[in-house]
Image (cartoon, rainbow, N blue to C red; front, side, top):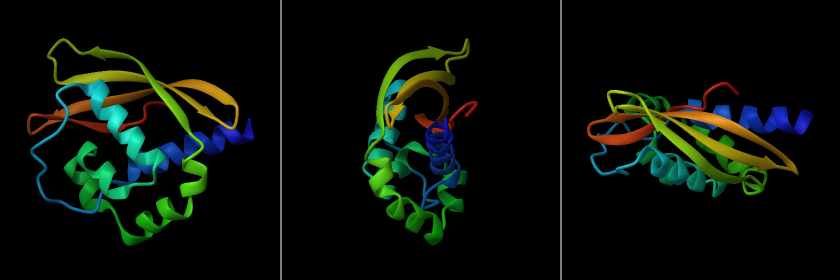
Length: 131
């Protein structure tokens, strides 16, 4: 149970951090599940720059050098995370989606709901749901 709590804290930290640039990013995935998949792939690789296009502008602006160092420091742990996007459900307006990801860390598997929204015509991941 402790490992599961640590995993969820790590995911929450990464999603809460944001990114390194406040610049507008105009290209991105056309599907919310693709945004979550791309964010997770970058997170598991501890690729901070790779995470940026899938985070909202506000979070990219809040990202600090300390946040970057924290991701790099935890790269060994992050590389152990396995994930699979298992569902995606758009809201009625088509501008928000709940994406469910099956996460496995240290042999423990649990579904986690993530929220993606459109920002400047592209999908970004705004939170990890209830962690």
